Image (spheres, rainbow, N blue to C red):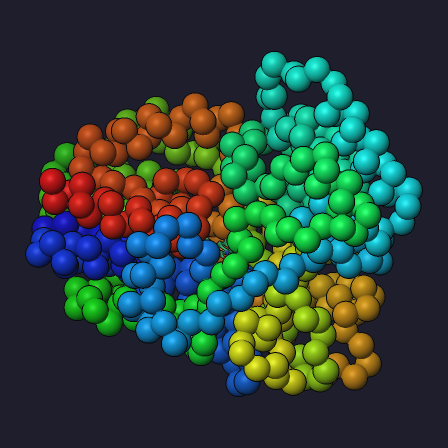
Length: 428
Ligand SMILES: Cc1cc2nc3c(=O)[nH]c(=O)nc-3n(C[C@H](O)[C@H](O)[C@H](O)COP(=O)(O)OP(=O)(O)OC[C@H]3O[C@@H](n4cnc5c(N)ncnc54)[C@H](O)[C@@H]3O)c2cc1C
């Protein structure tokens, strides 16, 4: 029997594939609902995902899977409308090809810095994310966007991060594209998420539920408390002990290692050394005229406590005067900065000061939502210890998958693929 830990996208997709292959399995999920991070909370006329959760597809196989699960007519395809708010100006994302409209001295700094870095002889080795930003974009873009935004987001010195995750997610433009962007001539779209899908109704959780109903072996409210490798036993929170042949775990890798009672000391130490950041979502239910037509807006400047605002209502087909908005902040897990009410108050005040909330807007609902494991920190240590941890687990019949299981930066699509491929691997 294969035991799957976690009914998020990775665990659900693994279960669906095992079912198709006729291999027996069971899924234990500590929460009362399946879905992991693709869940949606409702409050009256407002609904909130766990931060914006949109469906981007690089492969048609998974696009077909999702369309098959939800029905094509239940998905809406959007062209991204995302912006950056800086210097009291909204410019389209990504910043590096859209400086038109910013103060002239900002544009000048960005262009000079960009030309300067392009003219320099290429450096042999880029050690860290700080250097990577300077190397690809120059000091102007670094100073006016990349440094403040990323410092606000990552909360640790950028010299401690490596750039592996940014290579695929941050668009690197040509000289012509940057010049066009400064003159307002860009007509192209940049980045991996130009188009996305979102369920017509019910929020992103609709997708998780469409998967979960196909699986009858999901045990909810069942948390894995500990694992024993020697006798291949799992202890559940209701006191039950069960044996396993193989485990597919989508719980955060760091947590998984803590739960393995007989893990060798070096593996325990490697697990402890993995770092991540958490996300705090300030959810607002606002009645009144449309706050913004954007899907989301980045806020790089320090005077706004949040780094991003998301407008869930703009993922719906029709506008509504009841707008569900999320303001997202990050924090280091061991340094929760303020209490929930203070964070909510400061966020609402900053949003108002930036001119998004006006007198005619009535904030009818405020709420806090926390994502303890949100973004993995890509540092040198992760690179060094991760392969050894995953290898050790596999040697002991444990396949750690998904965004937090693999301790990586990846999407829902990646989690689906990972679950599916792991099931096929186990079948072999
Ligand atoms: C703020 C934010 C925004 C994002 N936006 C997007 C987006 O727009 N598009 C996109 O594609 N991706 C997005 N992602 C990434 C996406 O959330 C993940 O790729 C995806 O959720 C990973 O799925 P998973 O199954 O690996 O993990 P999870 O969704 O975390 O699922 C893991 C499951 O394991 C369960 N679990 C944990 N411990 C135990 C235990 N001890 N016992 C039993 N069960 C346990 C959890 O309750 C959970 O249900 C975003 C992530 C964040 C943090």
